[in-house]
Image 1: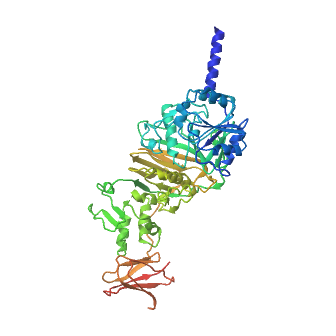
Image 2: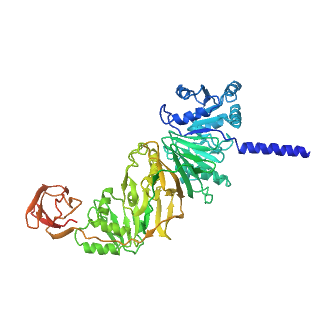
Image 3: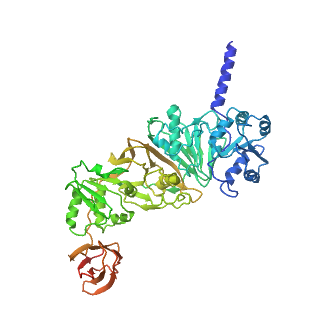
Length: 637
């Protein structure tokens, strides 16, 4: 009897070991996209052929084979024999097919629907064949849905596709569907495909979180592979990346607070990216290569308090305040001040040209500034030290001012902003994303808004959050969802962010000093570590930085009124004459000896008017109808 129990114990132990720790076999994980003979796919697919013991490759699909292209492609790479097999629920238990497949040592699963692969094959003779092949040693590969089934945890998508925003909206979404009883490959791993192309970074993070919610002792690693990109994993569980994109490796922080009934909240998730030729050790869960381009300049950051507010009425923020507040807006009509003398208004289309000392005093006394949506053309004016708007900029940046930024103005207050994120769906893929200089009121940060509103631009969004973070050498990239607000406050040399919203938003933190470019023009980079924070109605502290107080300055403006007659009002800046009204005018440039150096006629409101000298000059504008005049004394710096 004792020997019987010992025998049973050994048997059970061996079964447990077999099911939990499968033999490591070579794996080809392809994120999707068309193979190209002579292109990106040659190296990884050649590797796949070379791993096959007898070079006999079975191409598996549940659908009809449309052509022989893939078959011929494998043959061109050195395969001895290649055959397409259509296996669905009707023939997955066909003994003749199973017997024929017994001679093959490489199996490649095509794209399609991973739920069909799971439901058609589970507990069939074909399923048993593949399981036996894995135990004996074989090479498996797959692209898109065919890749999705090659891990211990399979996302089946049996109730429909999980979109990147679903976990940010509701961690109880019905689209979270997983199985861990199919093929025992890549233990404690969940994979995702078309990763950059479909903006699936937050999707995979939420998948890992969902699995951990329901299996609290498990922290699987996530592997996201881009389209036209492959990850070749050898028997030592070292993966090598080939292709035009990247393979991303995601690890949850072991301490977190995830509530299954709410949108996702999850801090300190680690992301590592490997591009063409780089390797990742799955056993050690670390990148094996050193990136070759230096990045991350940790410069000083000025202390200020900034609130970014999406899809909310600015009036709600001034109704009950008694503090001196300025509303800065960009409209052709003036907002009526209904709130009292403690509220001042500044229309960017009618900035003051007289009584500047009074305006300066008002600015210096201002405690809150509300920055409403404005045209990006005003950014240069804010940054121009010869402009009155630079006074406003300096007060917004002051350590004693609370700045509230609304809606379309939000991206402009970061260090940089992506100017064509939503104008061309292929900008990231074609490497044509453009970044412009922002106001830097939230320094070392790149900000995007209304994320995941249009899936057509998800690839651009993911690129901005990651590639923009590193290529623009900023420390944080922030993607805000609609109906949200976030406040940045400096506490103990850290940004403390206080977030509230209907859905989660995402903030990435740059913690790498080097990066590598993708093997293509795509907006994809390799890096050693980025930290992700999925934020939802909570406060978190970001990494320590060097903060210092910012004192506003009010530079002398080079425009000096000499006199003003009747209704002519204009200013000269940025080599332009800017009139408040249209009119038929004669404009003269006069030196201090009274000699007319230039004379033009124009009816425009804005006139290009470069001054050819740094000597003091006078600009005189004469209304040709009324004879009214105004002159400006100009002294260029």
